[in-house]
Image (cartoon, rainbow, N blue to C red; front, side):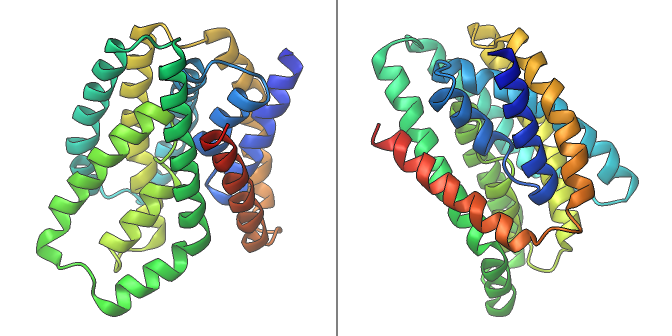
Length: 256
């Protein structure tokens, strides 16, 4: 079973390296559907896994000047309180009950379906927002805080959303920013969000530290290999395949 976790970590790491998407979107459903890990433990473990893997991205993007710390702060103003409130909500639930399991699976499925749409239509949405001037500049700080609030809830409940959803929404809110700045800022924000959410789950006892270490053994070489292959592989087709997997898994979780 441990070898299976290492392989799962490697595959997810490879996809993250190739596309920048797929961490929470794939790891949690893989743990739930294929390894039959309880949803709350899959989410909690994946959140700390994301905090560790994405912290490496902060140093890389920080050195390249790809992080807009104002965007990061605005996102955190919404996401950190939302994450804490969601953790308190989970604390009131019997996390092992059928009701809690069904709730987490349902929201995980919804998050995956929305993520799949953002993976497919990200560039079109960004171009449309830029062309039509959808967002008035004076509203961008408020929309960024609201985005953070939404991500805080979704990520704490499902571990999904910090990557694909965050980047797509930021591209619409900040259509004139470079994609590298948007991605760098999103990764920088994902670290404190997943850390706060992960520590919240740790306080609930829903983190499997042995599983966390095993996943990291596979994912770190996977991310390294995927990053080096990204320039040689047609990302467009990888994204389509990833979106198809997310749709299939999302529907399976909702109607399971």
